[in-house]
Image (cartoon, rainbow, N blue to C red; front, side, top):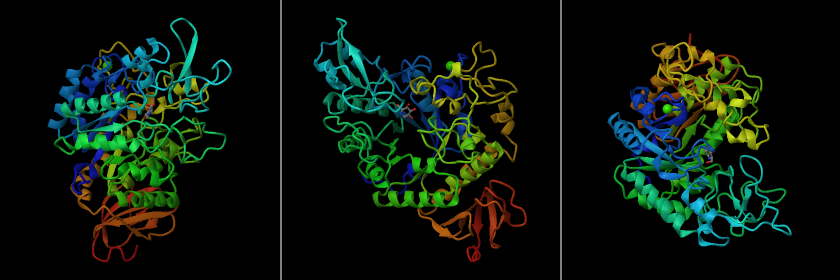
Length: 550
Ligand code: NOJ
Ligand code: CA
């Protein structure tokens, strides 16, 4: 079925719930399904259209649930399958669609298939669902190739056979507890098609696909070599991956209700990226170019233009994302000297001006919500949370910390449990009588950023998000998917959509004058006497002639 022009997901605002940090219903310090169910009215009132939940499946939690041991059940930490089904129904009753996370590149080393593979004799069929490969060197003591895990260290771990002898190596592009599945194997394909149907039958509205560019590997698993072309790595974006998404698309299209795929596609070139969004593949994908872009007018405008240009030929809607559970929160990024984001160099602890970061984050919120396409809000963005950079070393949980030899503090700083209300931790994250503290410590200063503290406070980030999401839904989603650029002076990014809506961002240090013929719909900072302050974004309703002086 071709991409339909009026489908909900073309303009959706999707809220990312990092399940273990959203709300804890049973008081064990870990977020869960019960907590989400209690907070559905909050999400409904925020004005988002859909929720994306990070993995809630049975998992030993070696990578916070991205190591799945049973794709058809909920981990007891998070609740039960019955609770998950109830949540799907209740989300729908609240007008919210629900997208679950699918992790097809790898499973857990506790998944029955991997246990069976380890227990099976060398060379047996049970091992063919994974990548078990003899090592190099005289005695097979060296990894089969030079691939490095995204979490640091070699992407291979050597097996010890039942009789104690050293065996082949298995591939894990992430932690050793996350063996990569062999997508050349028909059983792997059948299994995931069945998993898709399992959740579609339970009413989910779609899937976020983890590492969507990585499922298939280049035949022969060749070395990367000393100076690899980032656009031609043997473990990502190999041609075979597209056939998988075509078969999945046929499955999802057979269900009622416009259910969708959103791919986690990290690739260096827009043309590679766009191939995933052809009409018979994925509906949408995260725009990481935008997330990584520095807060500077030239690069921001360029990345917006490139995004629109890459999506248009395949008819897919662009998406906009500022933060997620893997990145440094953008309030912190934008408060630094170097405002871009690089997954390989997170610059933990760089000097940060959080007031500046917050002001820019407010402007960025309005910018993203004004652009055509879909937008993702990571939990806590709407509260203006900054990265928590002072988690004590011994409390860090992300495998990146250990695997990098304590050089990369990992992703815990953006995963700290949300502050809901009250003056002290757990700030309503857990029930008042909870015996256990939140799984990561919350900063005491968060007492001023709780949902309770920000509700009804006109100048709060939460009020800004609520107002913007409402206006976006009532007015902006009806506008054409194109933008016309305006020249609002150096240091600005400004565009018009339709015949009367304009968005202007001032990146320069001095205020700029707004056009005379306009009404301010919403601004991320004070607009006084027609002057737009530095690092501020405004939404304007232009009256005839309003663009003349821009
Ligand atoms: C991407 C996910 O967003 C991240 O959290 C996870 O560690 C890796 N994929 C591996 O599943
Ligand atoms: Ca809990």
